[in-house]
Structure formats: C-alpha cells, structure tokens
Image (cartoon, rainbow, N blue to C red):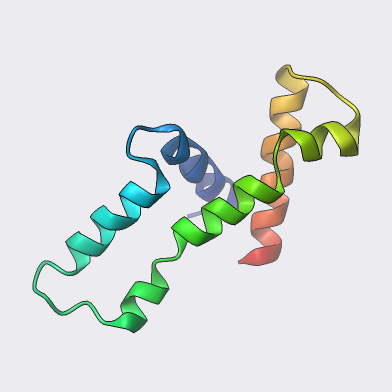
Length: 91
C-alpha cells in the first residue's frame, strides 16, 4: 500500500462509525480467530497508534499556521499532502 493510500485509509476509517479503535478491535479478532494471536502480532498491527498520531500532529491548525490558508480545496489538498509527507518519514 502506498503512503498516499495509507493516509486515505486512515482518514476514511477515522471518520466512520467504527473509527480507528473499532477497526483495530476487528483486526485483532480476525487475527485471533484461532486463539493464537501473540503480543508480537498485536504490535505489528499499529494503524490505530499511527493514525491517531498522524491525525493529531497534521491537522487543520497545522495547515493554517504553516500555509496561512483557510478551508477550501487548496486547504484539503495541503492537508493530505502534508500527511503523506509525514507518513513517508515515519514508515
């Protein structure tokens, strides 16, 4: 999955009814369907922590301060662009 797709996935899931935490639970349950999910395997599924960190660090306030722009298409594009850059640096 590309960094851009990871960001899109996290953004979509975080806005859904399930949310990142709910999806994390579903993933754990699916992986543990045979009762064999180890702590190491749980650590490998980190999108909840990663997503929460990205969403809190690269948010609307960050974009407004860095680029001095208000809401709109350009704002949304910059927000996504900055999140993709952040994701590339982290992963």
